[in-house]
Image 1 (cartoon, rainbow, N blue to C red):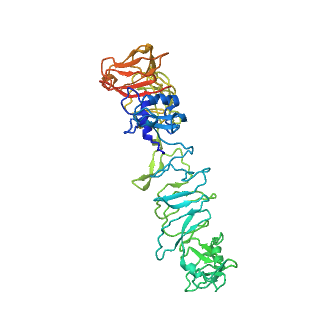
Image 2 (image 1 turned 45 degrees about the vertical axis):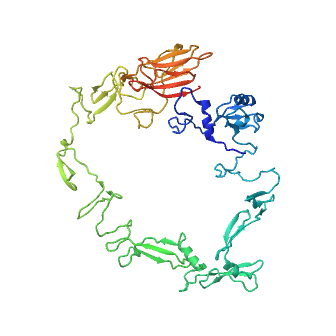
Image 3 (image 1 turned 90 degrees about the vertical axis):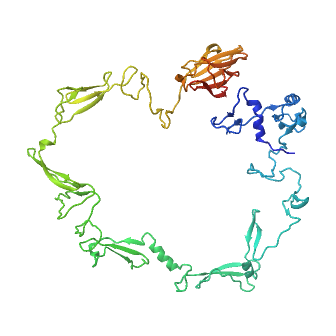
Length: 586
């Protein structure tokens, strides 16, 4: 009898092989260790690796069987002669020490498939099937109900229904079952009207179409005992009572002309096109030969009395015109371009006026345009000598010097890093700011080159190392090095400057490792203490304790008695707590 492989049994049985004798909490192997299933004492997670149970041969199985192990243990037998049911997965269900106390989880018939389940098969894939595979003796596939055959598939694939209790279809139900060329059975509604109207047609029928001026569509007719079926289609002739129909060739040509690339054209603009009345454009049908359906758009130039388009020639416009962009008035072709207005000029953008005019250097006053208030522009006469007098002298570090600006009135500012402290130096025509770079013994600027800073530095908000985000107080985008030290002789004290401490096991029975006593000074400090194997037999136990006698997670000592195991401790200010235990083999 086939039995389903139950994953839950495998996970529970695996505790016998992976649990650590000192570990009394949940364990997760693989995946994200921060997220453990709350209902599992052991969770395995991987998308590339499997869970491998112990594989026992005949000798190993015989030894384990005679020990009368606890029910629930799971093993895999590799030797078909080990058990009457052959090789495969077994779990201990009985309390004795015989083969009957070990139950096979699933029979292996060599097909590589799984049993079909009463509740459905969620693992069905392409190629899954219910029936007999190739090579099985040619016997029909029979479905029975109450011991009687109700449906049988013969070896040829023929379907037989010995007993079919099918209800009679109700009135108006015309559904029939049809089998397609691909063997798919489909339901089709059969119109009794169409069958009745064509019941006089026998054998092959000729389907032909004909035009009709009426509104009748798809009228099927069979002439007596003839074999012709004619479908009539209405043609749109433009009658008052005819609201639909097919298009004639003449109508098609008209639509084709108007939608072609030349079906709509714009006529060249000429002053002769102007007509009486306030018209800016005219749309008219092209009456030339062969232009059936085509249209021409004529545009007229604007005048003082008629609207229209702007041309490159001289024009006179009437009405208020508002320009929302720049207005540029320039000399065109050597002429004296200009703007003549008897009213106000309003602009929401820049007003560019290109006027070339020489101003005498000896003039006592010059006129400038200024804006008063929010919009009004006025002319103002000022003394040119008041427009600016330049830099007279330069003062550096509180002391006046003889330095002044260059003859052109320019003052030069320069930046340098001379000296060991910030200072300002002057030249004949400028000022130099000397800001040195910071070093281990001097203050200064932080540059992009390697630097060493002295003194204790505190970052109030956050610190980012490398290019990355700044959502945390400390952001590291790159590699990091930490201090790793190995205690000589397997015993010793963990220093305040340590982070990862490796302890080598020895042949001694017990080794002692102490951490600095928990205090407010080392609140939040983390140590990782890792056990590495000794040369030869390693039977020692490493005991970790607080050198001031304070507890570690409620205990006087924390033990590590297996190589490659590590313990992570954190100071809570008054005691130490174990953050995690882990096993690694690298």
